Length: 586
Image (cartoon, rainbow, N blue to C red; front, side, top):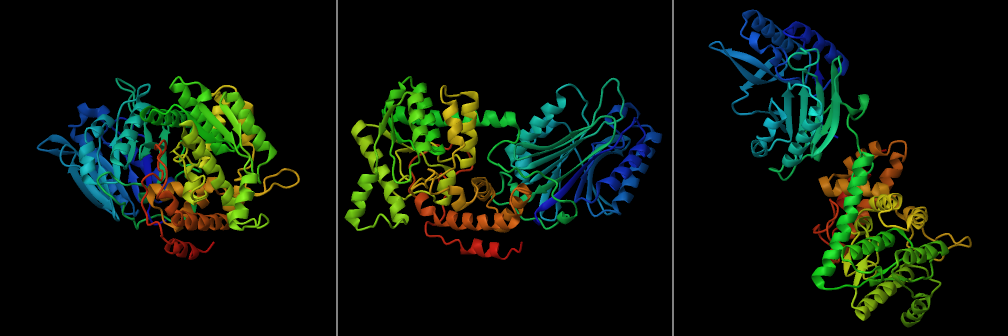
């Protein structure tokens, strides 16, 4: 992981006009925080804004200069850079300058002039001292610089709601510029009149506030590992790898790696996000119906997760259009592998939603087909399985013609990524509603619909569907009516594959790094050797399945990143990725 840059924000006490005490606190903080590639300090650390009227005092100026000299001396003991701002005097007039200090050398530029742009290794960063609102006004300048990291030494007064507001502004800036914004706001121990000051440290990355710490009465520090491979400023097309990095073996990675990166971390934000996804799915399907003049839907309902969500979306779309739920023709097509549990759940769901329900068994038709092509029903191979999926697709499309209905697809993003669908079978539809949602999201969204009753009357049925193992149900069940196949026993846990997919699509992350990130995210849940084995499956299936995605039905991008418009050769072999993975020793 040589793209990791360790950032440390240090917010020492800044008692009014006592720069020597501030330097002393800073020295203690440095001893406690360990090594970093870059140390960000508050704006005007040794001459804070609260003492503005006394800045021209020679005594004060001398004390501030001595403290800055002390910091420069401290920098000789560290490899990392120190970033802050300080006052300098020209003909007796104060001028704030941004400073980058490293190994006893100090680079500076006036704050009201051009921004100070420096590099750590190959990482360009920009130093922009000042208030949050002022940074937003410089968004274009940030974009033009192509910098992946913005350093913001700040010193703003504290007021109720101010820190939260500034955090939102920094998140907005990082999102607009595709970068990270690191802020250290000073003020611990400063005056309590006429302003109240309070320190905080925060880091926003690609629109998300990733780390934050607010101060009380004591100094604070925050360490965060920035991964340059996860940043791509809007002015650049590819992030550059960075060769300076701390030793991760010493104390691990100082950043959170989300197990479910497609979803927000906080429970409240996740709920809001999932509800929005569901609304977008319904709106997309309703728009397709309006634009085509089609007021009838047909879809297969198996009692599994994907078809369940597709049916719920269809019901919500009909509600939006003020159409009766009977406009939906829901078809259950039991075959060789259908279990009683999923069959009953499919019937209950259709009844609860008030759709038109139809049952069309496929076993006999498939047996006739086997006889036609000379395939033994005892030979339970890919032909045995795919013939059932294609028979179901034929029924749905023929019903669509018969009824003048749109065939609603049920397949999801995870299945599309892994090629876990039958070409010309469940791979096809008139319009796909789930294809940009991964399996992990579909599970959580279905649970939310049940919990909050976004669709009334289906809570208990949804809960039982959620408790049912994921299975294509193409092989006969056992004597206990347990599915003859369990998808996650074949492929591995979907939560792992969805993790791999996110970082592959969003950042083109190489296999070695994918494995490293997954090992961190799933520590204590999956062993590294197990993760490597499933990553091998993901890479092989993902790169070999493009031919199915190259002729996919229409869909709307309700979630990102997704595979709509994803272009790689349809006959690509994954050898280069698998070779890299095999070189990694666990």
